[in-house]
Length: 220
Image (tube, rainbow, N blue to C red):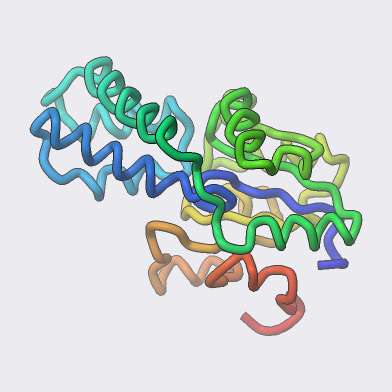
């Protein structure tokens, strides 16, 4: 990792085990509104910003429910879940952040979550102080899989994108970081990458615990 000039993290599903909570409450909202099992639809939303998610859901629900009604139910269930217990950290998150900090590399978060909300979640998780910049989905016009958010994060860290390491869990995020020209590690969360997706030329590791000791100059 010493060969990189900075490290840029996704947040939900990578640092925070929040995608699982989002799916649980999404499924509960679908059940309450009698929309059936829409897990596959939720998976399409992973890694996209709020606007992208609403477009995907509006198309997927195809007029069976008003988005304002669905969002209100989902938000109520999600808020209630977060009130009952904090969002768990993903395995190895703190250990990896401490290892990178010891190397003196600058750190940023590039997340589709709005910036203010992302800062709140990271603060509650005790991770905010590790990062020089938090770049939320509201700071760019085009969401992942477009590279905009990663290019902005690199610019704010004052590093060249091709010298940065990006860490992601979702396919949309991986595509965004690759399009920005970065070295990319995928640590899958809810959805495992297919054999075809693994051909994009990035690393796929089982856990954040594997990242610090990974030999990036070895064969994939």
